Length: 465
Ligand SMILES: Cc1cc2nc3c(=O)[nH]c(=O)nc-3n(C[C@H](O)[C@H](O)[C@H](O)COP(=O)(O)OP(=O)(O)OC[C@H]3O[C@@H](n4cnc5c(N)ncnc54)[C@H](O)[C@@H]3O)c2cc1C
Image (cartoon, rainbow, N blue to C red; front, side, top):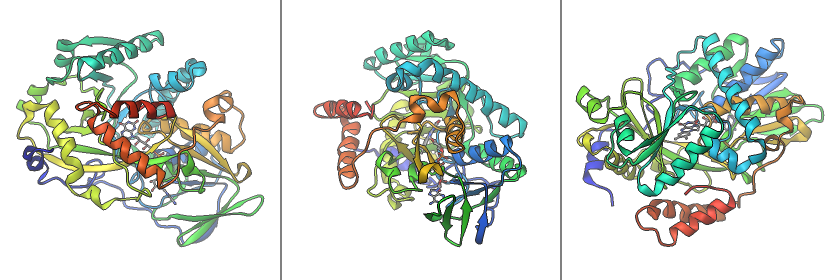
């Protein structure tokens, strides 16, 4: 049951990402017309593709790099996220401990290196991405969530993170909500960024390095010509010895990619900018990115102009359409709006300016992996499962190393050398997703069959509860 308060608050919302809704968005580069050759083709103009193009050019400026994007730069996941960044390249320390316990120290070090490289590139190319090192908090919204927060705290401390464990009043002094019972506050090496400005800055950097960028250029097929691939596009083709498929949740490049990657959609709302009184009512002086422990996880942050961004209601659409019509109507967002008002009842009367969804590439590891095709001439890098704003640089770097046959210590590690578990195809995928979404919706309030189902999902590899 949703409330009329939620409907009123959404009445004037624009169903388009707040991040991309800017007058200074760059004009699209020309589509590829006709046939061309390149040393490296990158397919996909989100963060992974942009990072790959930049890293490839920076390591060898003489390399001819082409990047093609089906739509516009950052119109996939990359212009739509919460924009919370952290050092983990494996969807958080807890997830890294779950999937690769033997490699956790190395993965931690790689994550710190990645963040250093990320920051260095932003600085060197003068990318104005509103990057703020605010830290991040994981907040328990009920007493049942406190043990998980305590466990995360101990894990982070054991790995040398600068963390604090906050009780209820200390948490509410950071960000005031009657739901908050305690939190883990990770104070360093994480923060918030404007994702669209970051992507547009990376695009500018890639162009300055000499990358040829073609938007509105969907890849339509790949022909293997022995020593090269011919990648067909809507109005042309690229002949090249090496292709990086940076197509993430769209899983484009080879029909088998989808056997390991499921596209789910996640939703986000932004409020209108807070007034001084509304800001005083929530606090949030340290502006941390925040995740909570609800089963239908919510995340929240402030935007540079002090709106609250509130995200986190998963949805699944059969056959993964690029832009489901239903996601451009209020219905899917009403429940998210209710969760917002349950979190911040003191903001009664506030209205939402934007509502949107974006594609998440879910895998059983909840982290980036690599798939190799055409005898090594093509590599897919993706599957960040909703945690790729900074990890995408790492995915691009390791994906490129694999593609170029470069042997690095990390290319031999389990995360790079193996693939996550198989996920059943349609229609079983839809059926499983439908049951899981219903379980996520009612698990906190109704319990019953939902918790065992979510535990089963965890066993299979999706730790959603
Ligand atoms: C709602 C939401 C919230 C999120 N919040 C966070 C967060 O707070 N923190 C965090 O770290 N991560 C978050 N993420 C995840 C993060 O946004 C992604 O992991 C990251 O953007 C992935 O980048 P990518 O380049 O791999 O994929 P994408 O940005 O999806 O890029 C893939 C590109 O490939 C293109 N493409 C597909 N098919 C073709 C084709 N045939 N030909 C040419 N191009 C093609 C697509 O158009 C797309 O632009 C969130 C994601 C969503 C959806």
